[in-house]
Amino acid sequence: MNKIYKYILFTLFFGLFLYLPDSSLGQGQPVEEISLSIKAGSSKALSSYFGENVELSINGNQGDYSKNQAELVIRDFFKKFPPSNFDIVHKGKSSNQIQYFIGSYQSKEIQFRLLIKCKLNKESPRIYALDINKE
Image (cartoon, rainbow, N blue to C red; front, side, top):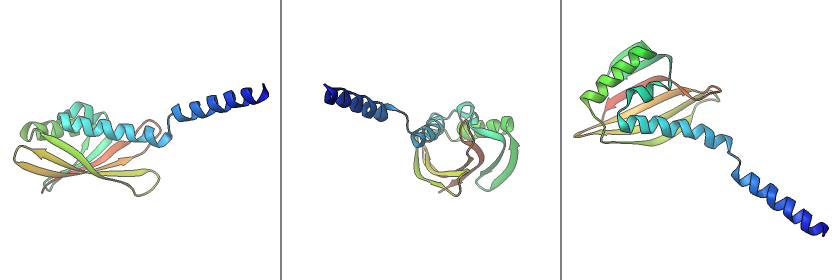
């Protein structure tokens, strides 16, 4: 009888362990949401991950913008170059607080390379720089 209780406890504990969220998976979820917002061409969804100030560089035109201004600049980019596809091709970290993503953005006949730089905080990553360059 004692073996049965141990077996049941072990099974329950192991089962719970399998279903508990992994902290690294939780950090990956915002990356997918960022990717989906770019695929959809949604400047509003993307801007929800912007920090208070964002450094934007679009084909060499660089500027520092507030969160609201950056949303308008990205909205114009999405209107001019509507997305047909977007894939993250590389993810990395340069320190515990800095994360970056490189993505391939396809718009009809033009392809762009995106470099998204984020600072990690308790809620989610905050984009502080976004570079968009034609390939």
